[in-house]
Length: 613
Image 1 (cartoon, helix red, strand yellow):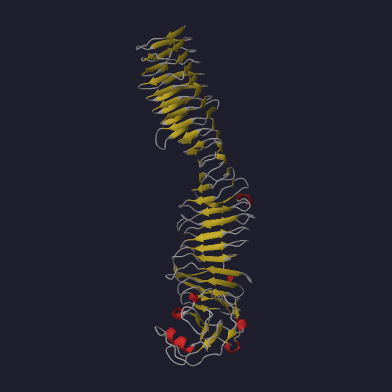
Image 2 (image 1 turned 30 degrees about the horizontal axis):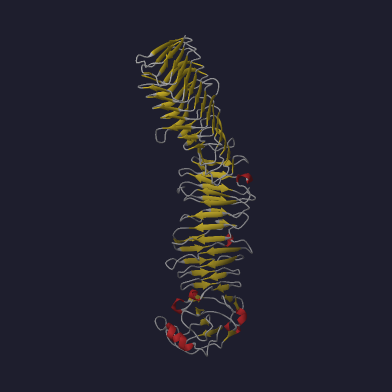
């Protein structure tokens, strides 16, 4: 029987098996529609409202509801549409809403919902049971949970979304699935809220869409594809194949990263986060993790990780962020298989055993670098960055560092470092970089144990103490009143500007040997004036005045150097090298170099050849 409602009805309407109801535009049915049977069809271009808007009271199949663009179905205290049975169809172009769920289809599944309008429930927008259900959405589906699959068995469920599916609760679920059924989602629209998959074999293809909440995988096998935006995937339970797509994606693995996982970060700056015990060791496979820029390690666990050559693409850099690890959290990282990528490893406060690959790797320590740590840079040009207070002194062991080319001492702290002979390979050079230290910080460096390697040491603006080894070292005191000892070998004491050593902030070089060592200035020294052995020189306020009197224009030519050994004053008997830098004969404070070289040897043979640029 077909019933056409053309006037307002406040009592509601009862339907039976095979009936058809048409509610025309402009007409309201305020008592709801109650069905008792299967194969019923309802067309709503007006409005239907009631405790349950449309309610099928028996477990029969094949009921269809069509809501036109001007139509609405409202459940004032419960569900907008509630139907038992299965193989039901809901097509909505208008509005379906419910104080509980907007659409609740119970039991045997195989239902179809097509929405281009608004489906809005307080608890769930759509609540589906069993399997084989299809939701096609180009409109809006919303609720505390947008779509809920409470009990799922049988055939796979499918969602094809080109519209919006959202949770009306802050941080709530847009889509939630329970049990072990299969759910396949294709999203070319927007999903606002998190997606919770169950424990079956599930898929999510969001290559053309976006999701603002986390995509949670269950314990089954999941295949996920992200879109162009930033997305978060929780993969801490199942076996997953994930392609992040574009955007800065985050992959949460917990303790679940293993050889069965396949993670491709895609474009953007992507992060894999581990939060579990990996102390037994994890060896990466070629497909386990690719196109990922950051591997983040959460505190409270120890990690033993060995990457594959494919883990880092050619020319790219993987940052291993272990900065949060505490004193009891050990980090063992082995990147030796890497042939064409780079690592930046941010170590924690525990014991660290770190091995780089063939690229240019960086190893960053805050204030926690210790002799018990082991850092092997591998091939390439490798650096260690220190960023903390090392004023108490750090003496490296023979295996603390190998294949490291630079140790950078970052500003804001004092550093006191002593190397071991094993730290620099025969014929190799280790650079100590502290040039950015301000005058309030100092570098004390002692490389005296080195027998066959070389150092280049850059001091900062403070009063540094720099000691080379047995090789051919280059020492830059930079600003401040520095003390430098080259040690054996052919050493160079380098100066870049007059402020590095002038007036009362002059440097002291303890072991200059004119037959082996050199001075380096930014300008050429064109002559050596006759040594001066008469004159007074006192430390303190009179230093510059007395030095200018002893080393006048007749004693020091333009761009010349001269040796001055005062015979009176508090500095009597000390030997100073005075070098003209400003091109004006004689010493001028703050414009010419002054260096204390007391203890120097073979000065009688000092020539312009001992000065290089």
